[in-house]
Length: 450
Image (tube, rainbow, N blue to C red; front, side, top):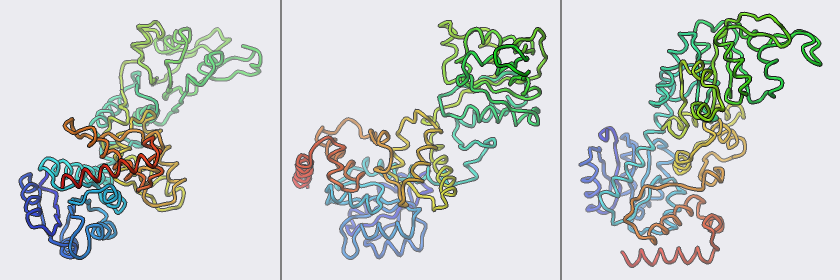
């Protein structure tokens, strides 16, 4: 859908403008042109522009001044710098000023189109993330996101809510398994009854039976009164057994009896009690693998796994991560009574490429910490946790020399720390003298190629 994007190319060289216009128009983009910054500003104030591609050095106001104008007056417009004077300092200055991409002349058609596609993809993702209508589409209460994988989860929740069958929720830690369990309960006919959540892994094995099924007075030392368990409390409603994989084989036998007979026996009692409880279990482990190893009973597994809901990890949810970021930024900024900060495009690229082992819970904690600890309005790569900055993948193919790859990486590191050579040297694992030598070699190579 390239035709929906309007691109403004700004360069004092008519041949360069014609090359950019011809290449982008052939891909379906709407291309406007301007020969200087003043002309570009008039176009920006009169037309909707999604992306500005500007030269660095032009008569009158420079490309950097144009970037500053766009950032201050058209925050929803992306910027790409194209110049024949490619230096590390130039790249750093362009990024600091607000450019989203930086490519050097002479460039190939493929390089131009790839850079434009990257910038517009990020713009599209941010716009989708800001759209409340899309962000909440088809999502049950409490859920945020509209990715294809999550829509499948929403459909499964809706089907499960209409029945009283057992549900097994699987997924990595932090993906929202309890949220799914609550959605199943409150979306069905048992919504008016109790929802009781039990962390099976957080209760000592010696106490788990008493907590689940209750006990009578005198059942054990310290049992001074009869007390109902979680199953009796959840009668008529739903019990959520989180981390069910952490229960012992002996406890699994007792849970199986509850599912089969719909009865519980209080610790120390000789009589069973009927309970009408819907069981929803969850685990972050592969129960089928545990069954094969003899660590989980196969009959209980089949009883629990009537309806299976598998939650995808955050890294597989695409643009949902941007929707979640915006949600958490507003939430924690409101709590802190401050304006919500925003992320630079470079920071968003790092966030999207991070593995997120803690999933949504980890993302929420990271955003909360940054809202509380960072005072400035723009969160950039150096503000992110160090683990997230370790690797910023870049799809550049395998046709470049090692020196070219090294030069690009040095530029990216310098840009990420806003030109701080001491910090860049620390990240690169070299001293400042070696960094200066690499920068000088980069300049010499560019001078020889120009």
